[in-house]
Length: 153
Image (cartoon, rainbow, N blue to C red; front, side, top):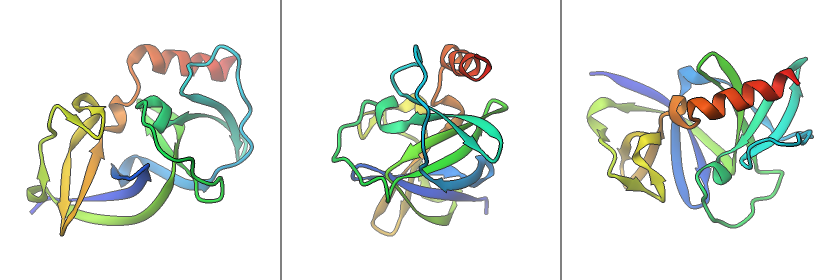
């Protein structure tokens, strides 16, 4: 039986999961340096132990509404996307879970207002539904290039 390990986090009222293999670390939100001409969903950059990392706000990326969460609860999940390290801002990180392949359904065309292109599937654990994000697809190739360019300047 194939199993996945997921880092589970919240955006608004929904729970999402991302493959733990893509996650480098989870950190508290820190001072973000804004960058002119950055895409609207890029909050800016942070210096994480000497490494400059662009920060993407997933709520803005997916055009999700929702109540503002206190800075104290927000977390940055540092992930590797196409050999590029980025931080994604989420409302909170709750746990790391294991889920078996058979508990994952293919994604419907739109889930919680997010297109299926970003979603690998929907995990069912007890009465919970966890939207499994395909972290490689949260940014288009063009957006990846724009973000790469931000780090150089």
